[in-house]
Image (cartoon, rainbow, N blue to C red; front, side, top):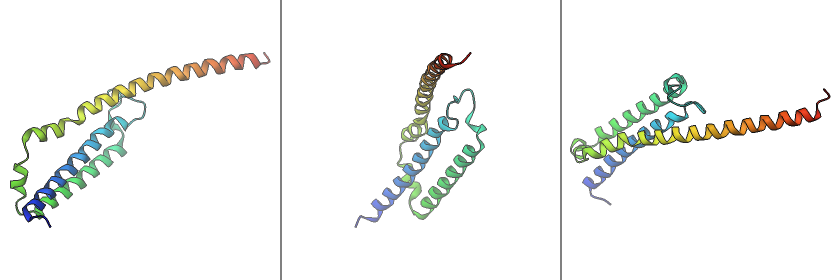
Length: 133
């Protein structure tokens, strides 16, 4: 078995990691609130189901983390050992991911529009060939 202090540190690290994973998934899902529309054109908070799901998940995660920290006798000391730059990095890391997702969405939408124009042209051409008029 592990020493009690080490178990507390592992439990504290797991709670912090679960919080950051939930935060990352919440931020990552911003670009999926609307399938083809950019976050710049249609803000994700217009999708009420997404807003409810994100708020609910973050509330449950915050409650879970708070309960986990109240169960540890030395949770405040363990949380203070976490360097400030890791917290800043954990909170800021999803922002470049959202930007990359938006760029990929823009590229995919351009390819989709091109493909749709090609299919429309092909359909109109074949329709014109077999049309009785």
